[in-house]
Length: 168
Image (cartoon, rainbow, N blue to C red; front, side, top):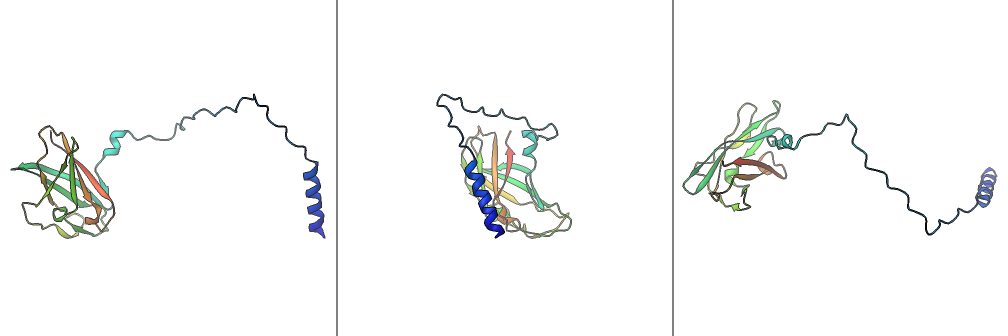
């Protein structure tokens, strides 16, 4: 009974509501709110800070050195575990999983490493690996090479790690 009364009161209230007037055809549209500046307490990260050393938690990959041997560019990497409580399965990129593009947009062909692939196994904190990856020599005018390393080689991850190798 109580429900019926409430429904009746609701219906009666809806019936008494006046219809909203239609907008005039020449009415101006509502103003769009102006863009709001971010709050002052929000920190912004400079673009240069976003190009820090590539990280794959719990591993850091950096370029240790690079050089030419004949028609090949050889890049020595440093792969270290950053978490003291983790062991990381690692397969060297010399065995596959590396690609490179120079600053002119040329893809560099991966080459067989000139040294035996001994950097495969479990990495421990404080015991970094130093794998060597090799590519065809870039054009003389190239200023840098971006090396894309598969995360699969580090604990079976997905995606890529990109390190930039300056050539000048």
